Length: 299
Length: 233
Image 1 (cartoon, rainbow over the protein chains, first blue to last red):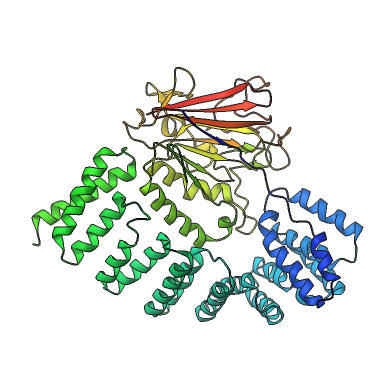
Image 2: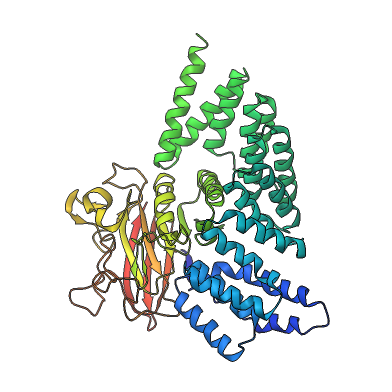
């Protein structure tokens, strides 16, 4: 008998700052060290989101008590206050942090405070200052892209999303899709496809990226290209019933009814052997309906 | 990944709570993955449970705090339907430091006060007053009789108690609802009277998956099996 055991972990703890503090004492520039702290804080933000805010806050308060001149501690606490929407406290900590070191070190997290307060122009300005000093910070570009979209500035958002993708060693598929959707909305489907293909090249044949590309090809009425792209998903999707139905639809729209019918017969046979989930039942219904249309022929 | 005859899917409920675009991409990916799945059993895991009355982690919370950090609500509203539609059998989550285990559910996407056994739980002999426990004599079936022989139900387990168990409701969960989510099953091993619908003790879960039966157990630090349910296929 196969046994599968799982242990579910509790929340991740925040990365201690001490290792980062050592950077500040190094021979490299102070701003480089500060960048390290700021970057570390950006990656900590997910861990700060757990409802152990009280414990996080206590830890930072203790750290500040131990090192009251540490700029990074105030930035970290300001970020935590921002998460919890304690904006007054966050602003006060940013103000204090500015007296303890270069204000640009706080600009990324300051931007998040502005964003939370819906002060989008101030958020954008803060991120622009940050990026002027730290031009290779992908998350700052991602944040500025998000702000630009909120301001309705799609051109700027696209530019920043491209920078984010350029700098991220391992972007999320969704980053490519978000950027491509915006580019397509701006009337450049070809450029959107180029970006998606870049994502496929970089990350492999990710179905969600390829599906976005297929949607654009269909929008452009380039059905042969859509078919070719869906063909690349045959193996990753294990030639699933859903894949077969979508391929049959494309083949049918391209006039290849014989191939479409063969696929539909195959998937109908597959589904009858599979568990009757609601999704499979719907697929079977759609396949039968499409097959009936195929058999009936054009009216 | 697949382990034997079990397909396991891990989702992100943390960072995706901040990004609707990433969440939509994850949904699309999940649909493709589950559509391609041919394993006997399907288990999905992610951190934030859609249903919980654990300490500080009441899944009914709607305090947006500026539209951030509602992962439990988002997973319930945007993913539970997919689990029902695409044949997921089990969902395991952590976050709440206690053990809670649901009935065999379908379609419960709203707050806990909207849960009714008649609408959402597998029933014993179709009796709306008798939601099935999954325990001896009331084993679940992958093709649910209550659903007319369709594979559309899921057992949700909260097991964030591998290293820590909360001893009180905390600050954010009301004391009078702590471990009392109506979609969760009463736990006879609870020391309270009447038994609550969760256990505030440390333990682990283990799943044994065979070709025709899956058994899931919760075991305490002394090796005692305090909860067990089976699904047959």
